Image (cartoon, rainbow, N blue to C red; front, side, top):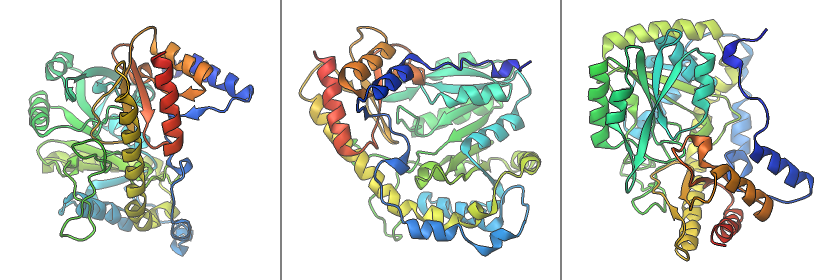
Length: 406
């Protein structure tokens, strides 16, 4: 009766079962996987946010496939102020309700059923479900770790077939926290040009860049006012090849409940024009964006200036706590992280990562993610959220290391 594309394993995994059993028994679990920024003790400007959602023009229906002009202009201003992309045309921006919807639009634009896209490994597990729903095949390419994460270009070249339509890059990657380096960028451009491939770039964590010591956010002020000084570039200004850059309010302003995201199309003019024409039809078919959210965009994007420093202070404090604890033992190490909200621990392999995570729930009442959730190539990795409240994070790390070193 049902389609093969939805033939997923729908049962709860063993880790979820262990957590539910512990909570049912009254055990208080320290959650080191927190990904919802609205529940980690941040201070939001509630009045400004709520007032922005009550704009009277929202009572009138004005269907715009790519989104209302003033909302798209607000996104263009974000790139201009925060990432020095001064000539981004708002007509190249299409609003969506989420980056997931943005991916769906781009997958539909580029791929026929059975076509292939290259995706990084390790990375966020969402891609598999999105690809299944769009009848697209994902082909993984590895990120390798050697004093930092790097793209494996020989493996990329081997992964290309006649059905490959594009490559997905997460900048910075989730959960590795690794950005595309300048040298990698040039190789990536050459790789795409030679294979006539589109570039799909997820930049939801772009603003959360750490300094060279992996402690504090790179939030030094510049002479241009209150714009943060960033070292990492956005792909939204990439004009060398057809590029689709995805981002949204979920991470930029830490507002995942305000369903606003976007796709920026850049590249050679002729290809951009063709892509935008087709994207507009796709967007017009769904008309998914709602008026209150679009009209609130300038205010909601402005919230990033208040919320990002809080998040980066939290990330820096948690990394410092983690490193102090790691310095007292020799069995585990933290992998280098350049940005984002997550940290990766390399741990001794005595069994599967899932078994280790379950044991941590059952014996230490602490929840972490096993590396296999993110397609790490082998056991020996745990993923931690760095936006967990600092006291809870510190207590949880002590318990994790006690278990690992016992």
